[in-house]
Image (cartoon, rainbow, N blue to C red; front, side, top):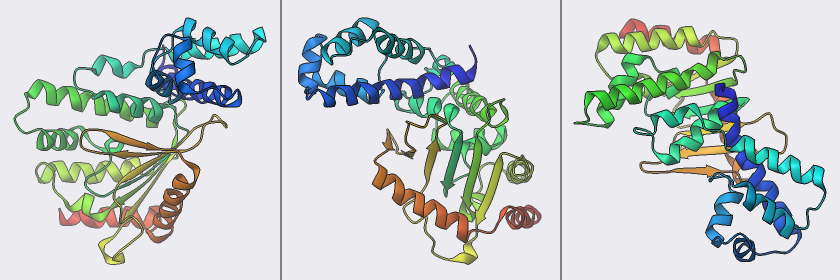
Length: 287
């Protein structure tokens, strides 16, 4: 099983969930009634429709019958989607150090065709060197066993393979200058990280911009966020907001549009890729 297949399973879960929701709503059936038909709660139906749980073939068959889907071709297509959605992702082997709420994000990240991020606290995980990642994880988990820190760093490095995979997404990052000046690790760690950013920024699928202090206040005042776009036309863009103990996935069109405007302004107001590389080289000389 490839990483692309396992990442795609998360997207298929969300696609199947949204199709089940549309079918239910078109028949005027409540979540409570749908849950009763498969001996489950209303909240179970809600989680299924949001793509947050795996699917049992029997449940899907019963729901399709309830929703009046009798065409065998249509039923088989949706059941096939359910089988694909249940494929286990590579990241499940890191379940000992990976919060459940972050597993969904890794699957979505691996399935995206376009990833856009704004980061202010530190260099984004997909752009971190091993030494910098180790320093970030160790700082965030004081007193954690070294073996656990190493596992978390290994997971982060495994995630980075998406940028050089056969189906690598376009990756457009805006890093606030604060993320580059805040030291994690010693001087050599920071120098290595700055050199790495210069190298990665020259990959054809990567665009890196630095928002400098000299610009003053800017559109990213609400903090870091990630925007994901998928090759599937019937899956809307998702905004990912990470919190201390959970994450928020924003997919309402009007809310996503607000983040879209902020991202567009960050792209417009930040120096372009070549000027940003010059900024990185300048910081490297100062480090």
